[in-house]
Length: 387
Image 1 (cartoon, helix red, strand yellow):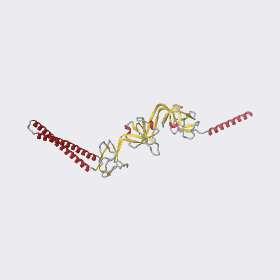
Image 2 (cartoon, helix red, strand yellow):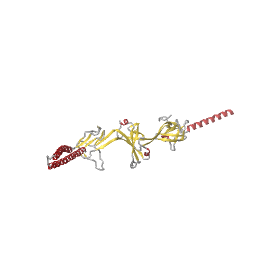
Image 3 (tube, helix red, strand yellow):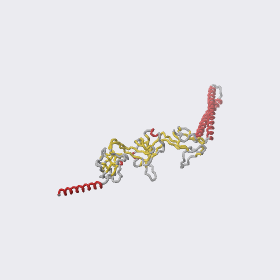
Image 4 (cartoon, helix red, strand yellow):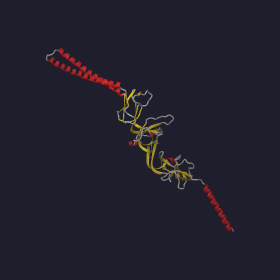
């Protein structure tokens, strides 16, 4: 009888223990789902990037207009046309100036002919004077005749010199007329594409008043040479030097990053109202072929590489908490906080000098509720995180 009671007691006690364990198991906290990434070895670069969106610009771009006002007589190009250096883009009415050029050219021609005539007479007078001097020595000519011939010689020489000077004046007048005519014509200063035309044949154009910019008559762009320009915060600018390597990214080509090299760092700080002070940095594309399908005006971002280290232990920068700490997902499903020592860093990776090894799994979803030191966790499998 006593044995039966003991058995019943043991059975009851076992049941209580099982129920208590079941209640404890059911009552324990559900593991928090986390996204993890593995610590690996690779390249880490120390970089600095622009603070606001930059722009793709053309190495050569000119908004050009006539320096004088007038009526458009010729517009031999259209938007999108490729033009060569010196090609005519626009011409104002200039019939009066053409007439002045023709007149100046005729005057220059007449002056040249008159000058040649005068100088021929000067040569004849010089020979006559020399001949009479010879005859005077032989007593065959009078002193008066010889002196007169010598005076004619000097007078004709002076006339020849004056005629030559007049010819030079005539050519200068022709140059002035040609310069005035050139002011009515716009020609391409470099090879490029006509991006914009403001005006039509028959319309009047006027130069921009002082201090009041107006749209150019022709906007000419050389798209064969492009570069990226972007503002860098004044704090980061001192570390940037010409020829430093850089990366260029564009919204128009979201899946690519283009290699580049710093071509210029502005020698002054730009102050924009209600924004941080910045320094404009320009970056050339390493391969000009990369720009073939690009257009000036595309938005662009630059990332200047200040330094780099290869084959080092690195952790995703997004996993690092305040105080250089990370949460490691351990083999028993717990989150363990570790303090690490870091080296070079950028927005993607940070070099780890101490505290982690390749293969460790660190939590990158650090902003989720319940993600803290000592928490039970499981890896989220629907986000593509490491298993």
